[in-house]
Length: 304
Image (cartoon, rainbow, N blue to C red; front, side, top):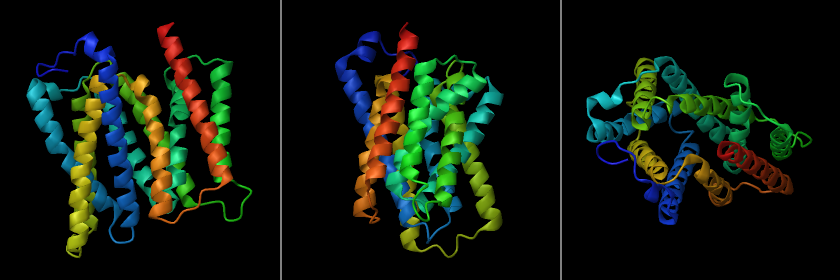
């Protein structure tokens, strides 16, 4: 989009160079997001997650305000479909909260791998709420992906259950609801406005909770530094995400999301001393394969 809010021309959108830039910016967004999750996990015993989320939401607002005002002025923030916007905000807040809780209570490598079932959840929700028709091939892919998730969790092992598994399920479920809502919003609203109102809602909720129930007096300088870093990184994450979708479509960029898996393995092994077993590798292969197939069928259906 240019400064006047008009779409970029087709040659930029579909050129090989623009796809490379889109994939590069999305990769940067994924790296930043993964490191935010790792930082939250590392400092989870030292600071409340609610305080972290408050700063994460607050620091995103200035960037979105500046970008929105530059593109279209104050009118750029007007939302027509307020009901779906409310659903997107609540689902997004719950999805992000449960996602960070899952990382805190579960291996980051497994949490990132299991989060890749999101296209499967989105597909199921699209059937239930958007009335989309799904054939035998995509139903088979859904079952294969869910089987991969079960293999990673490995219910046959001792002490297999962890509260983090429940948080991953809830986080993925609410994030999927958020993306289905975003599909609807994308028909009438712009991405900057929806991101602004979502982050404003999140900052209000967690600021109200933290001010009324928690204290900021006992936070060490080290934790304050961490909170500022997370806030700045979250702002950069928003910019990278917006830039990635300026240069390439969401469907074409979908495979880039799987770079979170090697990043999770790297952080899990290096920072958190996690173990990678055969179940993890097999389950991850099934999840990635099934979601890629779902995306392929989705794109084929759209083209056809």
